[in-house]
Length: 332
Image (cartoon, rainbow, N blue to C red; front, side, top):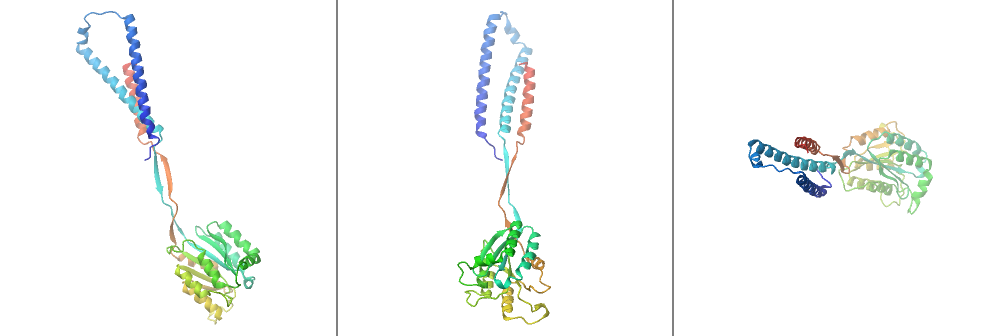
């Protein structure tokens, strides 16, 4: 319990004692002067003072004065404690489950006809999330962080809508300072690096990668190497290929580009989907992500202060009540 401001209690008590002592002296002198003016000499009062009843009454009177002083000081002290607002401070550590999901979007010209539908499906999924953080990275040349990880789903939805309506703008921005186009591997590496606290391997991290994997032959990192980089940090990749029309789920052979894509995804323990397949359901991908062990993240500690006068209020009430009763008995 924190008691503040406690230091002013001692001065208040000291001042109270001084005032009471001064009043007592003043009153004593006043009655002494008054008694001299109106005094009537009585002989043989020593006999009265020696009576047992007188001694008993005097002892009772002194006892009441002492009690009055004790209860007065107790009332003052307890009242000051209440006035100083003692508080109790509780520290609460907030913990919550969370998953980090990066939407890694290929905005190259070859995805122009399919990305709009995929973005609409992603918007629907994001709108149903609670607690998960989403981030958005767009790439063709250099990767662009459209949004860092955030649980502001309204902003995420607006940014996905912006990419859907203005894909050419993001494509142009991705080419700024870029050494080429269709850099799938570097784009995926950029998505990995967009996660915060990469060294914290206890976090649950996933990438939803939307690309046709039509990669440039001059890219410094291919998709397999980028997937190995993601695996190093425990990141699972779920790949969606808008250019796969081979219906892989029916056992039809796939192209070399698709096989490379599938291999990269499998390296991380994720799943590969052909966007044209009926089995490609973003909600299904999210369900797989939800099955992963979510990270228990610690939020900032919260400090709650509560007024805790405790027993001081009761003590003050009792002290004042008893003091008034004693004063009434003394007829002061």
